Amino acid sequence: MNIHIKNGRLIDPKNKLDATQDLYIVERRVASIGTAPEGFVAEQVIDAAGLIVMPGLVDVAARLREPGYEYRATLESEMNAAVAGGVTSLACPPDTDPPLDEPALVEMLKRRARVLNQARVFPIGALTYGLKGTELTEMIELTDAGCKAFSQADEPLIDTRVLLRAMQYAATFGYRVWLRAQDSFLAKNGVAHDGEVASRLGLPPIPVVAETIALATALQLARETGVTLHICRISSAAGVEMLRAAKREGLPVTCDVSMNHVHLTEIDIGYFDSNCHLVPPLRSGRDRDALHAGLLDGTIDAICSNHSPVDDDAKQLPFAEAEAGATGLELLLPLVLKWANDQRIPLLDALARITISPAQLLGQKMGHLSVGAHADICIFDPVASWIVEPAALKSQGKNTPFNGYEMQGRVRYTFLDGQIVYTG
Image (cartoon, rainbow, N blue to C red; front, side, top):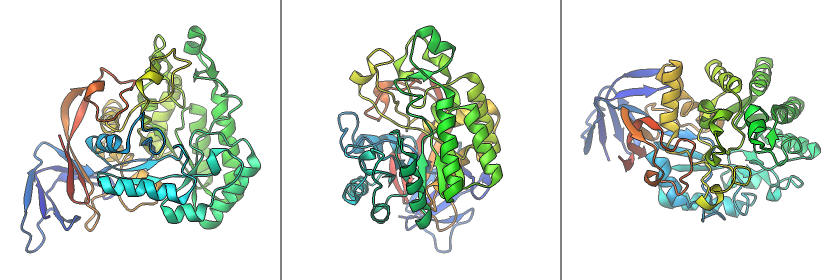
């Protein structure tokens, strides 16, 4: 279908474009910006006056809960949530049940996603079988099945010899290794940042050193092997500084941060609000400020939703017993807009953290509006306000620390491959 999107403010971080321009879609791809292609006849016209037209969002951490956890969420419910949030591409961590350690499981997930045809799903393969940290998976076969990187998700890999072998193998074939930096012994049974709030509430703590010790190990092994390393969900000032130094050194290392940690701190736990039981834990105000600084100077490459839907029964428990996690796909865009507004960051720079930068982390040529690119597009109203109400969320997981918050920025259209998959 030929589509003409007119009068919108186009923002494309890759091409440094921020201007009122018309956009033309032909055969599911961006055909032209500014002037119509020769002989173009629109079959559909969308007037985007007052709206922002941008590449579809790319989210590097969204748990879809299939296979194995359908009581928490289904692929269909979470795809609906994704397109309602303007997300057209997402990476799925391997901690499903069973984990994504066999090609058949990866192919099944991709096939299910293709049938729904709402967002592109990029599976992250398990680094070890069963995520048990002992035996390496067949990375070549998993890559052939569609995996874009390899990870342990939140499961520990205690044996550093296994991690070294995994990095050596991945480096040999040019595969990416994604790790969340947390020492499992120092974090054992912990549920909150080791600070004033945890002490006052009597919550088992997770110290910052649990992150930095694991990060130091990962960086040293990356230095030894030359593997392309991605650190998932950095949370501390000390961790940011270590990554800054590693990048300055020239190590091939990248990292992301959860949108929750961009905005919240340990104080938001309040009186045992289990919606704030997250992985990693919310840390201090100083840590949050360091995350902001890391985003500004490029130490942190991307912001993700860390979408982890949890069923109500698992959240309505005492804080330390409640399951960690929160829904986030529908909140990623407005929370990035809020961060940009609060920090006075140009939208061009802020939106890069949820478009072209995460696309590059996945090694995918998307997250932009270049002529010839797949027409994965998000059109949103930057001034529309709405209240986060659990019942109104598309995700089957209704738990979020932002329940009751007023958000600004609402998705009006989401396109996948030149086809409208959401209108709001």
